[in-house]
Image (cartoon, rainbow, N blue to C red; front, top):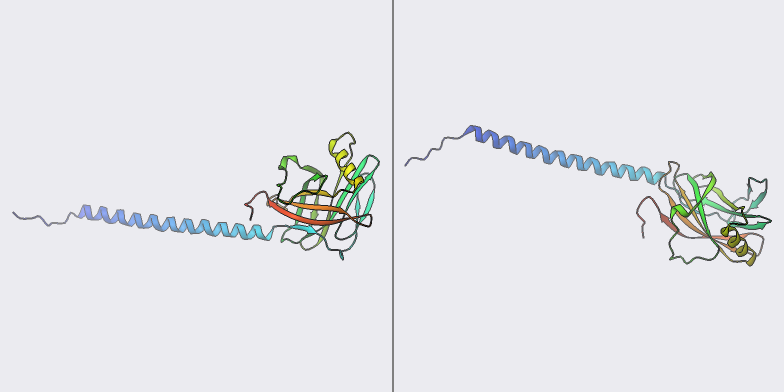
Length: 215
């Protein structure tokens, strides 16, 4: 019995077209994947260039004059903080240095009237006390944070004032980010009473809010 070896050119053409489409789809997928990877790397590189990180300023940094809305001014030496009670107001301040690569915009803060273990987590963002105005600290330069309690009926006022009068260290969690409002970080600082009328300032932990934590 004879075997028909005649090629079905329509079938061959269909197979060739299908194979070509498959190769084109694979090439397109690889191209899109590569483009997405490049875009992510570019975005991360841009974010890294805008990323702030706050630490206490150095003792040799210049003294700053910090003013409050009630007209009070305090002198804030480098590497120091302020925690004072005057009548119905608790005055707080810290001298800070931005060691990151982007401008730091300070948003909010949270005070714990005690020395907090380094293993404890920061409070929820919603529990932070919003600053009355944004404070900016340039890259590689110093600046300050300031805060007040002005309502003696508020529990936070009572706790803060009693801790200050008793000479208890204060833990301050500071929420800040880059100038575009992203890459938020919580840095934990400790104000410890010193021999002079100012507090020694140290930093213990940093937590990322808008991106994965390295730990």
